[in-house]
Amino acid sequence: MELALLARSGSRIFLRGAVLAAVATVTLQTGCGDWRDGLEVWHGEHIDFYHDPTFELCGGTRAYVDAYVPFVATELGLAVPEGIAFAWLDDQAYEDFDACAETSGCQTGRRALSRRPVFLHEVAHAVAQVHGLNEQPFFTEGLAKALDWFEDLVVPSQWVAIPVGEEKLPDPRPTMELPRIDIPYAGPGSFVMFLLARHGAAPFVAFTRALGTSTDLATIRRQFRAAYGLDLDHETAEYMQLTPDAASTAALECVADSVRPYDCAMPEIAWESPDAWSHTQQMDCADEAVVGGSSADWTWPSLHAVTLEVPMTGTYTIAATGDGDFQAQLGACFGCPWQHAAVTLRAGGQETVHLEAGSYYVRIRVDDGSAPEVRFTLNRTP
Image 1 (cartoon, rainbow, N blue to C red):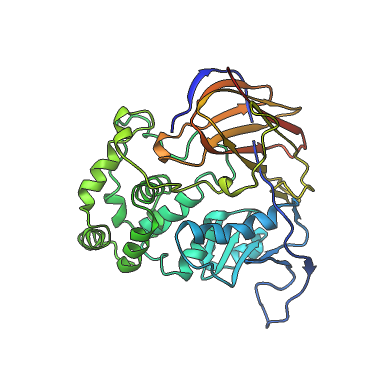
Image 2 (image 1 turned 135 degrees about the horizontal axis):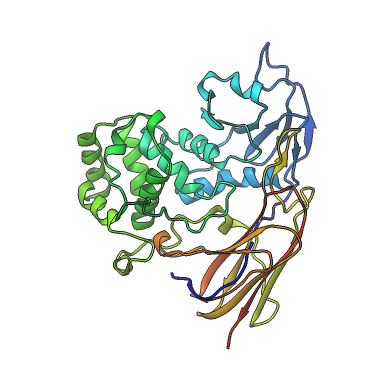
């Protein structure tokens, strides 16, 4: 799928959730020094969400993290696990976990721990751990990144760009041999996204389970052939030829609905008329459709997302209006990630784009803790 930009000007985007359970402030009596002591806990359908009681959570944050568990499991064709916990901790409590030192998020068993209110990357690790997919460093970090490419950002594409000064995507094979502490995120994330998009989740699940912790390239090649029936070196060469705008990418097909952004699981907003679609959201942190949070020292970005179905291929004008500073992004929920070119607007922005028929997301982000009313419109051009 391609978003061909025909005209441009400014920009902005984001989410809706539902409260799934009540919040209770508790001191869990589970033994001296239990990590949960003094934390506030919310028991969702799929996750127990813990946080420091002095932190302020936006109205949709807990439900957003909770619903990510079945999203990850479903995308990978796995059973939805039970017993997953997420904890947003202050620096002192977080650093009590030795394995988490000098990081902003980490995962131990079924627990995802973070210094910020949302860290889906670590929740993906926890789900993968349950299913035996969280062992080999390159593919472990690549999977978590592929499933949470955006984090709390608004970025131009699901696909990693060619590094500055390089002519093509870097060879991922040397990185496959590195220990976890040396693994970058973007390269492994884009290669795993490529494998999931090209072949679906089933061979990746079989491959990583069989691979275990091995960083030996000969073992990786052997297990890759066993799971995929393909040569790793040939698949790597196919991957390295890709660029976001290369004509050759059209020849590389993807499985249906592969590697969707989590935004694509958000509620769908119907069209006002056959030619006009709009969505308005007050980015108030208290709103159950807004995700984010704040502590005494920091306010994290506020996010909101919805989806829409574009019924016919054609030319459309998109616009984002509202007071204050924000970003709003329109992106596709189908096709190959390397063929996506999401469009990002700021306040007052407008662009004319070519859209293929299909599902799209709209993601809104506010950085400064304000609560602007954001309106995103899409109108079909005759």
